[in-house]
Length: 239
Image (cartoon, rainbow, N blue to C red):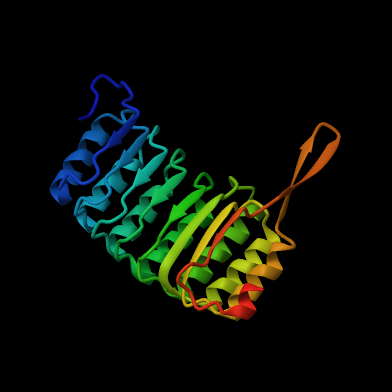
């Protein structure tokens, strides 16, 4: 699959191919030997576990062209997520990481929250259906709120639906939305009630970004997509 001689392949789509850990380890080794071969890598739905994730993560420490990594619908647990977080500290190209429908849990969620505080280039993170609790949601929201103070790249998309997060995580993201107008898409779930929905709604009034064009300062509405599907929001929260 890998191009030889340093030539970039662009997008490598290996979804639903039964790659498994052994294939991911081989692929990671090939990427180490050819650090400019892939711009986008999709290994979704391949039965990749912690060992395969760790091999891909190790390759990304020095791989300087890969911008998008899709590892959704695999078997990656806390250890695999922690290895990705550890290695991506060194990566200055990847902006999108998708890990939906894995098993990273709160240890993996907390590791990724710490990553967001030191990796200034990432702007999109998908963690749907990973058994994350309010602790992970609050940690990630706090990291995103603090990134702006560090002058990092503007974070645009966070997807964490179908988890075990409720009003604590929703309130934490409400605080982030008040302070940071960069976020464009947010999904949370699945225990958010009226209280969390009201906090998010109130925050949207403050969620703005300002762009300067020459001598003109233009207000740009911030969040454009908010998903609370599958939660416990009632009539009061929907008003």
